[in-house]
Amino acid sequence: MSKVSCGAAVANDERVMLVVREILREVAKACGFSHGEALAPRQDGHCLVQTGASWQRDLGAELFYTYSSDLIFPPNVGVPGRCWKLRQTQMHSDVTVLPPTVFLRAEMALKAGLRGCVAIPIQAKGSSDLIIMLYLTPKPITGQEIIFKALEVTREVLARSGEGSMTIPQAALDTGGSPGLNSIAQSRSWLKCEIAVGKPVASRTAADVDDAVKFTRKLDFFKHMPESTREELCRHMTIVSQPPGAVLDRSTEAQGNQPWRVVFLGRLAVISSDVLGPYPVWFFEPGQTFARSYLNLFVGKVGLRTHIEALTAVRYLELNIPPHLAPEFKVWTRPLWYEELAQYFHVSINEAAEALGICPSAIKRVCRRHGLSRWPHRRIISIERSIGTLESKLEADEGDPVVSAGLRTEVMELVRNKILSRCNLSGSDGGAFPDLFDDEDRIGPPRKRCTLNHQ
Image (cartoon, rainbow, N blue to C red; front, side, top):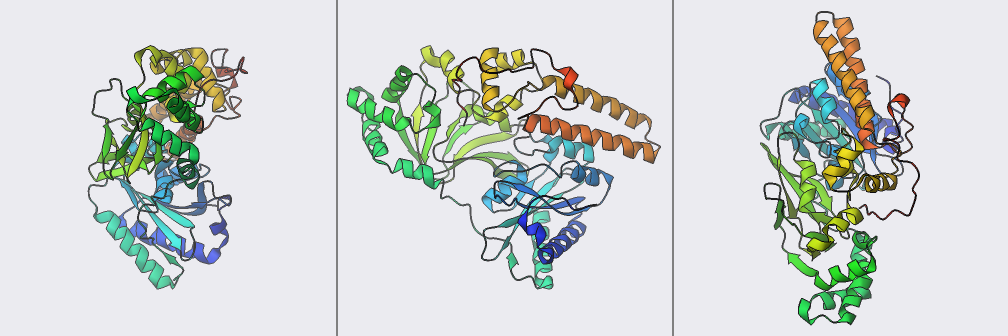
């Protein structure tokens, strides 16, 4: 398999890459992995890309690697992005049941016959750069032993190679947060807001509300709200402090009228749980908004248990939206994440708008904020229909290995196109499916200033 031109600086260091390839090979053979790949930060440091080092045991793993080699992983995105962000090992029992927000290539792994997942970071001493070693197994992982074995073999290869400049980092989760946003919480406007919001609601004066409003202008959550609404929310919002380990919301709780919260000190995470125990799948940094509704993005096909937990001591602003503002509030602030849109790409834009509780015009304005010029449900439906046709042929031609290999290749390419359709449609012109789009799918230029918020 040819080396991928990925832009990762580490890929140019042949001495390091020789060791990385040996680690992939030895760990995969010792632990029974079907697939191994090494990712590293792109030269601009914004995301992880493939280094070109990989190891595959069978055709399914080879197709998985070939058709996902050009995907990128920003911090927090997918298992590689979380391993990079946390600087810690990651493990999942069965990635095929996870939503794309947790494992981006879940459907591709299913088609390739890959299940369990292990990710291990390797760090160059004296450097903050990491190489992420990602492995996939042909069967679900049922215990912790496999990750200990993978770590042991990795250390043995590093010691045997004499590559003393590389090590497995033992650093705990970085809880420093975002310096820029922490500095906002230390600003004079925040100190005035803290004093104002710290008073009982009935005791707050017009000057107190004004101090709170001035601070909220620094926060994206309030960015597109009318001034009167901002003032009403600031008059009633409160400051809440929580210790490390505090659980704020659970996916098993009833929806109801849940409060919205804006972090200004500390860090929280969405924690998911499976047979291997709990693991973080998303992080909220200072300045970001979180709410119970976000957990719906992480439950997956089998209803994984998820909750929002404080990783450090945290302080946040808590807002309860009055009933008379609820309809307008949805239009101002939702969907806050691209992923909230993506989970509805398989239905029409009108159905998505109804599910999100906003009108089609509003959802089109959200799409423009994300750089989407077309709603992709027709493309995704066409891809799924093509996958179904090919898989039917695959079952019929199971006895011919040459035909089967060709059909599996076509299926994997379609799954890749489906992933790309969900991930990033910015600048898309319909690609290979220009005839699938009608006026409903075309977002078109904005007719007026967008009034929706994205964080």
